[in-house]
Length: 407
Image 1 (cartoon, helix red, strand yellow):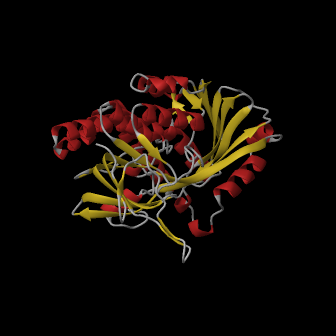
Image 2 (cartoon, one colour):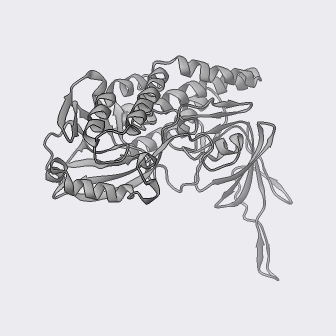
Image 3 (spheres, one colour):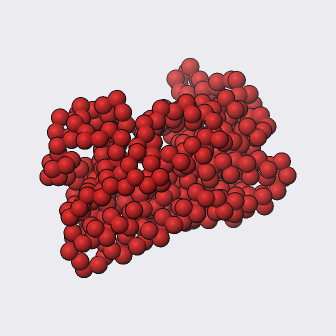
């Protein structure tokens, strides 16, 4: 289905650029209002939204992606560590991922106040990938498959009849625009506007548990081991500090915390303050980072809630918008990719059959997948960790119990 832009005076095709009527007498410019029809509107062009778009476009759908950012993967929000086994499995459906730079992680060391635990289990073997490069490779694959990508486009509102989204309103660099899609995909992250509109229009609708993190890419390191992931537990409320090597004398370092498990969360330090204090006070971290210099700082909230039901008439949620993540570590890209692959296939089938009832098969097939079952198990692990955090126990004992639950 082609795009149609409707101005106040004329209809023009997608090859035209119309800024509006110019009245030379009063020197005013009136922007035309644009109305765009498409099969599928994807709100959010992160790694999950673009993966969905690749699968759906490859299946013949007319897919339009919009994102408020002016550059794919900038600013970068998510982490770069992924399960080696699951990443390699997903490369079968997403072959372009093989182009992404990856650095192998062979084992994990967990430091806490009373012990150091080293695990070489297969499930802890990981890749550190170049996330920014990965997101651009996926976006490129989606566009090459036939999707259209519009950056600098911020969704401001949706018009619904019941739970059916009829119109999506946005502001773009060309002015206000109104989308009229057959199906809407909310891939706009943990504070998803699409989800909020469906669930009640409050900022944190759908979020039942959350954390926050700061991550710094650094260079000039003195690492003990270049292929070991390191976690530092016991000093960060509800979380841990970390060093994740990524090769070429670089590493991602930072902290993830759950401040509401502290005694006075509103007086808690920021994650950045926590990191610098930990990097100075922990001898193992300090030794390795004493000469380190930052290259990039990123951060944000981490949704640790249980997955949401993701289908609402003609709208589906994928990725962090549907709380599809490994909750005890807050890692969402692997579950998000798996969900996006299934969702893309089901949206194509729904459009081909003319029935949105097909969309209900998406959560059924996702929940039956190995990755989704693992994600469900991580919610239970996270809840057990939460129980330990609320116990009246010495901090050292809490740290040891938490470490064992992480394993």
